[in-house]
View 1 (cartoon, rainbow, N blue to C red):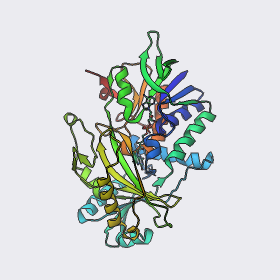
View 2: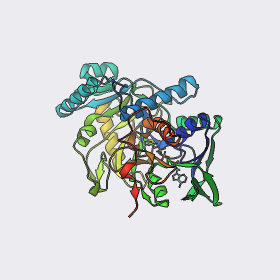
View 3: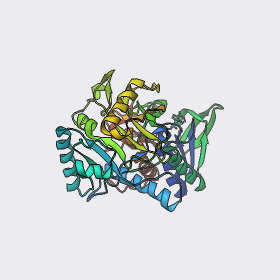
View 4: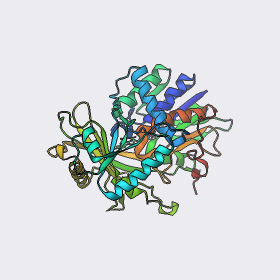
Length: 398
Ligand SMILES: Cc1cc2nc3c(=O)[nH]c(=O)nc-3n(C[C@H](O)[C@H](O)[C@H](O)COP(=O)(O)OP(=O)(O)OC[C@H]3O[C@@H](n4cnc5c(N)ncnc54)[C@H](O)[C@@H]3O)c2cc1C
């Protein structure tokens, strides 16, 4: 069996590794480089939460991916900067506390591992925080890794297992063949490659690839942006987030007529909420980001960086003197209904999509890659995939 994977982001390279290790001939094509887009530009935060009593597909994507990073680091000996110290989501107001307490209680009823920390407990664990904060949600299984190193490590493992990765190759056309299989046209020389199956793992460009075969893949680009300080002495122990945006988004349910995904910080030009995630890297840099704007424009919005920096120093006053030394932006693949899109494209035999992992695709991509490999090989996935398969969400273009 020959499979072409379009996209060498975290989803594409982890799919390639699984397929190659199962004896499939696999070629990954990317118009840029391995991890050259969001997979190499993200904050590197990996959620944990625990498997719980009866894991659903959401839990499986997170914890299965975390397990794959652990395996990459510990069994395969790859230096991906993996750090298992957990994640804190900081709580500032009574309203945030009530919302977080309910969320943690529901999580624990499902046998999972989140913990609610009081202010005193929080300061004991992370002394850089403002002691006036009400507390935090601790995800003790939260982790982080270096995005470029981790994505490249999956790619290198895939190549060692027999996969071929070709970079600098734009896929410009896709065609199904009358007798079965697919023809993939690759620029700049317009070479044609044949395959039994094709996986579209092209991040926010999945819709462009879908349009080549007449289907609407409802994934849009959302700009995420970050800043980094100059290297600092060790000051932050955990990956850090804030409950503020989770509370704001708990009431955001766009309809299909809105043609926008949930969980954005801006609607048109208006800010809906602040959002925050970040950590201190092993090289000492403090990195944070937050804004999510629906656009394909990757220009950093410096006003947004200033809001994010202000939010950080408000919650972490001990790092007040730390200022942004460099900034960058990348495009995240958000599906319109907020659910991942992983599985076969209805009506097009041998065509698969793996995308829509939004703002947590680094933490969910390795398992999404394994899941799409199960579909390609006709294996029954271990978890109920009803909520993530394309189904009616991926329909013929009007
Ligand atoms: C600033 C920022 C911070 C983030 N922080 C986090 C975080 O802390 N934790 C987390 O879990 N997630 C985070 N994310 C989200 C995460 O990075 C993404 O969800 C994830 O990387 C998506 O992976 P992917 O493989 O689907 O897509 P991508 O990484 O976008 O890869 C898709 C690939 O497809 C290729 N491609 C596209 N079109 C074509 C074509 N026609 N021909 C050939 N190749 C093509 C592209 O070149 C690209 O390399 C963040 C994202 C950003 C931008």
